[in-house]
Image (cartoon, rainbow, N blue to C red; front, side, top):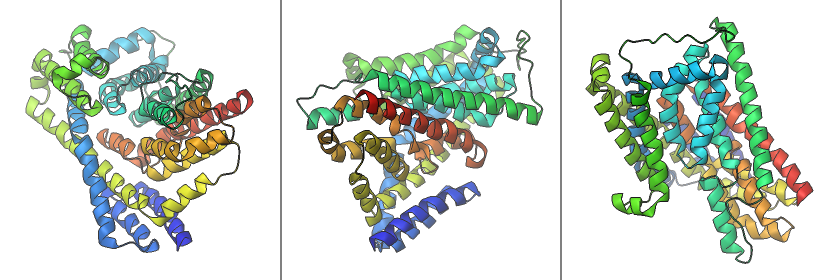
Length: 450
């Protein structure tokens, strides 16, 4: 029965990817593949659907305000002309040929200092849209480029990211005599970051240029950039930057200063993100009211943002619901036990185990939490250095973390109106292939150093 459940679990994962890729809506797809798991695992179908509903509603409860306010902020940035104004100055100063590098660096810095990947997307995407258009590059590539920085930055020492903080906390709890910090084993993190970033960046540059040639949108990047605004009432760069900077500063300040957290009476990262983007929305309305009213009308712009945010939330919630059913199957328990039974170098065990769990669970956070709760002491007993285990984790867990069953990634594509068929290949290269290569190189370095 266990073998059949494992087969059903794997078949469900593959079928889900195929049917979504072919255009079936996500909710129907997740119900379909959930029943494959229910039948092959002989689960009570009503209890399983209750688990689906629990995961579905839990995701909506925790993420809907982040996604909706973020979508509204993104719409306001675009409709006001603020995004175009910022993009114009960046493109003009750095040149068309550095557009992909600019987006990569900005997203890397933002995520490294602790800004949510959702916030980064909502803030950067409107600007990146204009920058990519100026360069003659395809819109559908933007998520793949943003994911370079959003994925790889967590690998660096001292990154403010749960995949960096969770391993440190669990190691300290289970091995109280061992000293670990958020910056432990820095060489491994730097190696993983450099290799992963280079793989993702070089591929996106290659793909963008190749696609531009194929689609006839090539721009001569050897000549000085001459920006022609698409409208006459663009806000100045200074005005346009105020909401953008305000969101970043508020997230950083309220995430790290307890007095400010007491002021708004919350410490939850999602609550801080919602507060920051709400302030950003208010600033956009106040500073760019004239542009917003002239463009499409403020009410319709906000309504569009809300619709996009709700749609993205519901789609991602369906995937989380499916993941909840999957995690309650006997096949999933068998796979966890199989991973625990790996008899090989502890760093390779970590590399494989984190990737497998992240791929099945659709969540790097859940995978790293599960892995370190069960594996830490046994891997250290087998000769692993706790600091090396800690530093490899953020790199390894980002490998299969963004397969098509990753709700957050799907929500981001949905918000940008990019289908999996249109945009996922680029996300796959930059947030799956690149981190797998980078983390494996870091594992080889760990084997030599530790």
